[in-house]
Length: 114
Length: 111
Image (tube, rainbow over all chains, first blue to last red; front, side, top):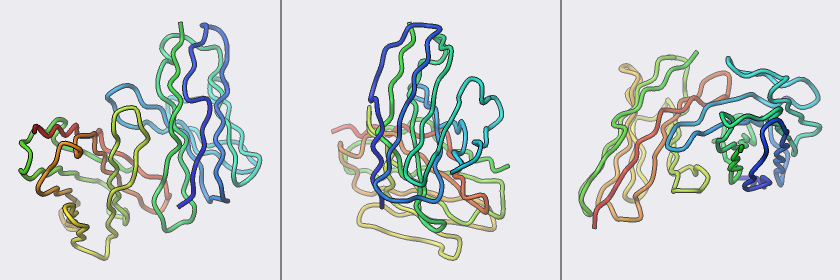
C-alpha cells in the first residue's frame, strides 16, 4: 500500500491562531480523509477530502473551522482555524488507494493549544 | 449510517493466553471489515481484514471471524505476547467506502 507523510508531527499553538496540517501520499489515491483522535479515544471522521471540489464534512464539523484542500490525487491539507484549547487532539490523515483496499494512515499531528 | 460497537474497552490477559475482541455492525450493506492495531503514539496499522464472502481468516496467531447473519465479527489473538499490547480498532465499510471505526479495545498483556 501507499505511504503517507504527514506534517507537522506535533505543534503547540496559541489560542486564536490557525494551523495547517499537510498530508502527502507517495502515489495517487482514490479517497483521502481527515480524522481527529482524542487521547485514548476512537477515530472521529472530520471530513472526506474531495479532489477538485469542496470537502464533505461530518456532523459537528464545519468548513469555516476546518477548511480542507485537495488540489490533486496525492496531497491534502487540513487547517484548524481560530484554535481553542478544545481543539487539542491528534489529527490523522488517511487514504484509500483503490476501492477494494484498506485505509492507511499518516503518522498523525499532535496539536496542543495553549 | 453505519454504527460499530466494540467490546470490551479494556482487556487484560497473561502472556500466552488468548484474547478475543468482538464487534457488531448495523448496516447489512457493509462488506469489508478491517482490524487495526495502534501502539502508543503511533498510527493505526492494518493487521488483518475480512470480506463479506468469507467466514474466517487466519494469519499466524491472529484470526478474524465474521457472522453476516448476526452482523458481528471478532478478532482472536492466540499465544499473546507483551508486544501485542496496544489499542485495537475494528471497522466496517460498505458502499460509501468510508470506514466506520469501533471505540477501540486496549489490550494489556502481562509478562
